[in-house]
Image (cartoon, rainbow, N blue to C red; front, side):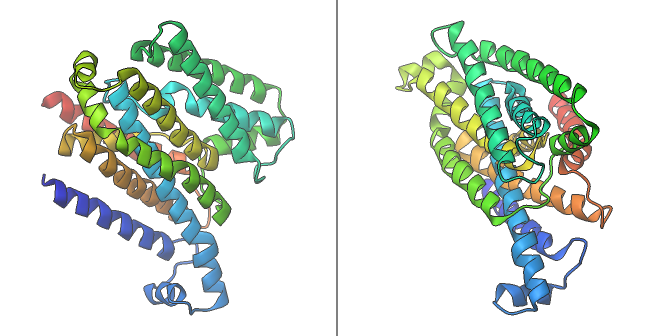
Length: 329
């Protein structure tokens, strides 16, 4: 497929998904009503729905989805495994421990502004722990040790979550489980700005590493001969990609499969040139999560399905199709 055609298609899909996010919901709106609000007119209730509820939620879905897909593409390059994803390194487990512990101890409530902060601190702790284990086994960053450390740390955090929930009251357990399913409900502009402040500069930093990741795909020794500081690139790529994933988990909960299927699917269409793969993965992830959020809001309206459930239901069959296609090549 033509790269320019695919890029244009992804950008158009993202724009249409953002428009759909403004139109569809528990209270459907006509396109003319949305246009009036965007142009500065419209009734007070319609403006409230569009500008304070749906627009920030749609933008947050795009930022989080794009960040998760981008970090997934980087982890797949870093670990040389097309089936890797951000959560394989224990980031989501650390964020979940931070959030669940904060809720269980009564420090924050489910809707508290401090809950994303607690989740982010837990994710940072997981990042630091995995990285420390990886570098302690070798003076450099061995990607095999990094992967094993992530799996072990993730399993440890899962046990911590199970212990916390086992000794918590029923309301805390229900709230924690719902948070871990992922949700964009109750999104405010403050959350959008926070997510953008972490994710967008980090995304630009990852895009700047595209050429180095291409060289490392040929071989670390070859990349070193061609002037790439391999250890610096690995540390930077791991740290920044983890930061992007941690920011997404902190504001939206645990949302799986975005960082797995989107980069894998884009790679099948455009190849492994990270100068193309990384920006296209961001666009694809943003569109995918925005569409998933529309489905989460409308499928059982006025009730809402956790977005992590939607991405799993959609992601599992898509992943199986991608895996079968890959095996048949």
